[in-house]
Length: 254
Image (cartoon, rainbow, N blue to C red; front, side, top):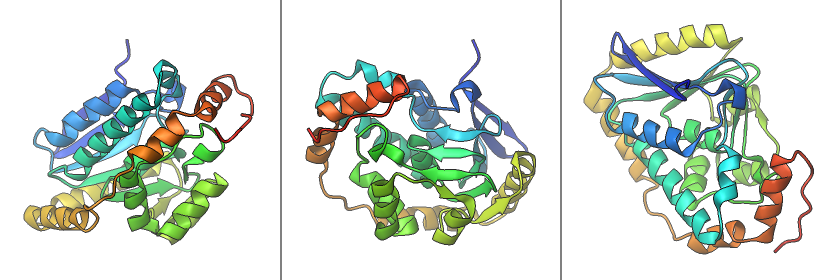
C-alpha cells in the first residue's frame, strides 16, 4: 500500500508530501494525525516544506467519504476540534513552515496552507472554501480567525458566500501567497531555495515572531452551536451525498 503522507529530511530541510494524487491529495484523518506528529517533532529539520504529490492539487480538502460515518452533530464537533488541534500544532511547529502550492488548494487543504508561515504557488493555483456550494458545513471560529488575519473578514465572507475560488494573482493581491511561479517543477526548486534562505536566519527570532503573531488572535469565542447547526442538519447529509454521487444538492435550510 502506498504511504499517503511522506516525510523526509535532506540537508536540514523537511519535506512533507501529501501523497494521494489519485484523490487530488484529499486528506484522510490518519494523514492529519501524521502531519500533527511531524509538526510537533520535525526530526531535526530547520524548515518544513509542505506540498502535494503531482501538479493537479496541493490538497482538495478532507476526504468527503469519511463523513458518511457521521451520525449526529457531535461528530461534526469532534471533526472540527480535530482539525483545530492539528492546525494548531502546525502553527506551533518549532520551525518555519512553507506551503508549496500547485493546483487546487481547497477546504481543509486551504486551511492547512493558511496555517503555514509562508505560501508560494504556481500560476494555476486556486484557493477557497466552496462549502456553501458543496457540503453545507461551516468553518470553525479558529479557521475563520486565521483566514481573516491573512486576507481580512470582508474577503473571507465574500469567498465563502459566493463559493468561488481565488486565482493565484488574486490570492497574491489579497496577501494569501507571497510569490507565484510558472509551474510545479519550478515551484519545487523555488521552495527549496526559500527554505534554505529561511533556515539560515536566527531561529529564536523566527520562533518568537511565529508565536507572537499566533497570540494576537489567540482569544476565540465559542462556536459549538454554529458547528452543530450545520453538521447536524439535513442539508449537510444532502450536501455530502450529492458531492459523492456527483449531483447538485437541494438545500432546504434545515
